[in-house]
Length: 270
Image 1 (cartoon, helix red, strand yellow):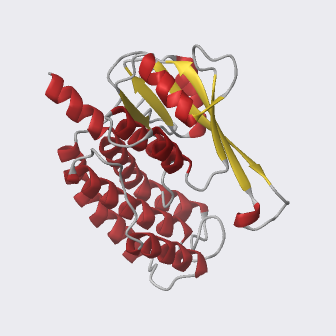
Image 2: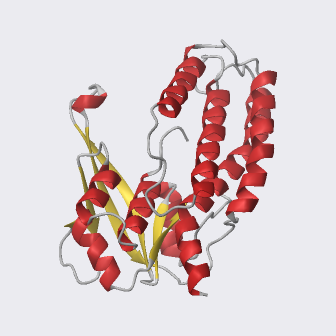
């Protein structure tokens, strides 16, 4: 969770565009960020893949009034509302965007091009968003911002306790690299959300990302490979069990933050 999900960028800047707070070109630029190109396929009314600028405009004409995020994992369909085909694709990708009012959802597929084993600047990432029909129904298990903030405070304590038990401080290059990456992002002063989001959403998302960083560090602690410092299957299982509820809380909070712009507009309309 050190990396911002592409669905989060699409929803945040797409919502800002739909609210008239940013231009189509700025929204498309912010969504793509470091990726080479983003295209949307199977969009109703379009016979071929289209770029983000045209796709966002088309979603508006199809009735979209906001964009919500889903971050599902096996056993936790967070943010999904069906049908099964869309849920399955979203679960495989680990993320998706739902266009509220249009009955459509977007699932990202990423493709990398460049020399095998090449450094990051040499690798070009192309993203294809597959457009599928979705049900217009309340998304699964998404908390309010207030609930998410309260849950995160406890999750942060739990994640810190797990790190302490693992003696993560100075426990290996992988943990240190993850910690430095998080600190660098936190100090960069990046814009966490697009214009139009309430300050509380920014606060919740920043805290969720901090908890996610601690989870990544705990998983990699020790530098002994995939399972960090764990040396037995029982220790690996215990670590995964300790981190699972914390990870769930952090993902729920991320979704609550990204979706808050839509929730806010719906409250005002109601």
